[in-house]
Image 1 (tube, rainbow, N blue to C red):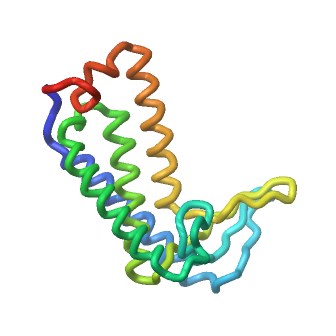
Image 2 (cartoon, rainbow, N blue to C red):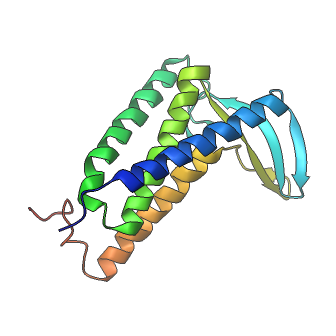
Length: 170
């Protein structure tokens, strides 16, 4: 029977939110919108406000996307908190869910405070610039990769069908 204690995972999600918000606070204190500070040949600090989703998807919409993405992130966060007790003993899956949770909440705070998400990390190479992102975005991305990895690893070990919530009735 998996552990139902999710306290450590909620603490980690809280730490992700705090690191995300502190990093954004520092960026807001140091940069003005549109500023770009060279850090390395592949990396700049910038300050942008993204009203859309990943890769600025829907950032030019009329404003409805702020509330859509806020509600979507809150629904996903509630879902994660509801399923985490069933998987709290599965390290990789719980870590993935926790990273997504922390990142989602970090970006919800921005949407509620500013109407957009603060992005400030910009990678580039050979004249190609990756869209700016933040700590919350990085946590969500790493969490998604871990979740996919967990699903492939579970399938390769024959555990995919035996995991609660993955096709088996408990």
